[in-house]
Image (cartoon, rainbow, N blue to C red):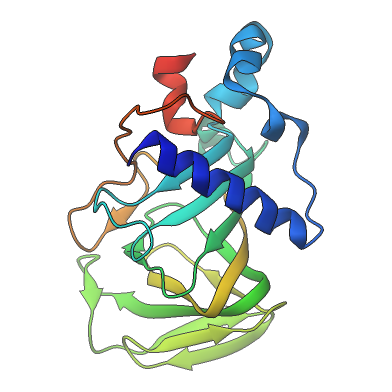
Length: 227
């Protein structure tokens, strides 16, 4: 993705998030220079990969296949081994109308996906077979705000604003906005976007950035090189 396109998406996304009254944490507004100046004191942000994240999954067509994310908080992977400590994470995301977040699952992360406002959030669901691959015949049962709902393999669950679904490890899912862009909340187990995203097709979780202008905000994938 070109940095100019990333900058444009960031500005649009910021405005969309705030239009729903969602207040971002202070570091969301820091410029790249401010982050560099604060580097000695922001290890908690950098190490936990908190902040802005935009991906086109390496396909070069963000409008059709992509996702806008901001990681608000994220726990420690080591805490999971001991079963105590900061075991949770939170994200705010935007799924644009008809923009696909492609089919994937997680080996460790359980997550609540919440429609915070906008259009209908559509989630295509599959169970896993004994080998962890997509089971294209078995129905899928998931909790939605305390109520169990069952869909056929490949069925589409539609969440209206205010509704949510709990997706446990091994539940395959893809999602998109229907009719309008959707503001999505995610509350989950500790998040590891590097190794705990298992995609049905070989795609990249993070996009390569072509630097055609200065960054408006740093992405979490920028931290290793820019900071």
